[in-house]
Every structure is written in C-alpha cells, then in structure tokens.
Length: 274
Image 1 (tube, rainbow, N blue to C red):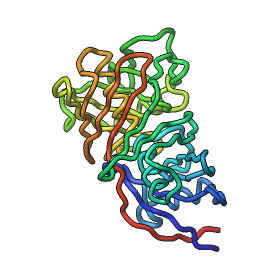
Image 2 (tube, helix red, strand yellow):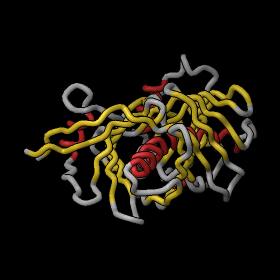
Image 3 (cartoon, rainbow, N blue to C red):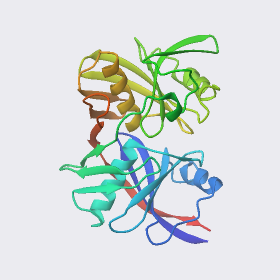
C-alpha cells in the first residue's frame, strides 16, 4: 500500500476529491473510488476528479460516488481550473479537456471561476432520451406521477421539472424513478426548479450515482436554459441552490452557456492506495 495525496474542494457545497494524474494515473477501480467517496470510511465526496494531461493539454475525468465515470460536472471543472491555476499549471484563461469535449475556463478574483459550458443539446438522441421528436416539454408517467419536463444535455443528460414548492417536491422519489425510467438509457440528472422571477431560479438536483446534492453546475445551466426556452427567464439568471448561487448566461439556441461561481478548498491529505 502507498499513500496517495489529494485535495478536497467544493463548489457551493458540491464536494470533490481531486487526484493528480498528470504524471502517473492512479488505479481507478470502482470499489476503491466508492471507498474514497464514502463519508464514513473514506474521505467523502460527491465526485472524484482526476486531473490528466500536461501543458498545454490538461484535462479531467469525473467519477460519481458509485464509482462510475460520467461526462461532465460544472462545479467540478471550476475546482479543477482553480487547482491547476494555484499549482502554476495554467494562467487565468485555459481550455481543459473532458469526456464531453473541450471546456474554456477563466479564473477570476476572489476564488471565482467562469466556465464556457458549451451549447446545450436538445436533440433527444444526443441527451440520450427516447422520444419520436424534439419538444420543449415532454410528458412521462412514472410511479403514478405525471411529469412535465424539459430534456436537454449540458454534456450530460438533464431533466428539468417545474415546481411551485421546492420544500414539498418529492425530489428523491421522482428523481430516483426517472433515473430508472427506460426513456433514459444512460439515466439522468433531475432538476426541480422554482422560477421566482425572470432573473432568479431556485433549484434542487437529484444526480446520477450520487442522490441529491447541495449543488449541480450543469443542473443549474439546464434549469436556466429551460426557463429561458419557456419564456420565463431572462438571458442572465442567478440560480440559487442549497449550497449557494451560480450565475448562468445564455443568449439562445446555437450560443454557449456561461457559468460563474466559486471554487473553494476544504483540506488536503493522503489516503492508502494499492
């Protein structure tokens, strides 16, 4: 057994263990990743982020708490960008590689990072979501609930459900049921959005392989985009999640979504690794 160093970071409460795989990629068996993410027996996190590559082609891989690799994580990329910047590996602006494609980042002052999240994808095949044709709203019946939702990809699949009350929304029940629904062959992240005003959205998110988290960056992007598509939100929106706020900007279809929010350190340490 060897000692593997890590940094613990979070983006408005969505927390990560960051591993440095630039020179030597650690073994990433799902069982060990599950142990690392365990909040009682390991370090504890929503996702494990592994920094890859070398100058100028840095990138990152994302593993949910269940050990499965996923495509994108908006809060995570802010933390990776801040970490690489603090390591002296990148300047204030850089492009990072991810499974979902290249991502432009800008490290701002006071621990804030702005991220170009790319263009949202609405074609059901690209989400993926099983539907005959594209629609601004889809209806699914699951466990007796009739769910009206937007479906899109922000590099990973999202369903956005409009609710009147976040406190009363059956987040875990509907989120879990939709993730297991056959219409989502790769499962789905489910956002429950309450639009308080054209520039304010409150949001709870039930993530794949994690459950409900304090924040979800791609989920905030998806909720803002859905609100704008429905004519309920302006091109610049503050999305308020349990862990804090993100600012999302989008000028319409064919343009990129911009996300701005904090990236913060919790602590550093090491853990046994075979």
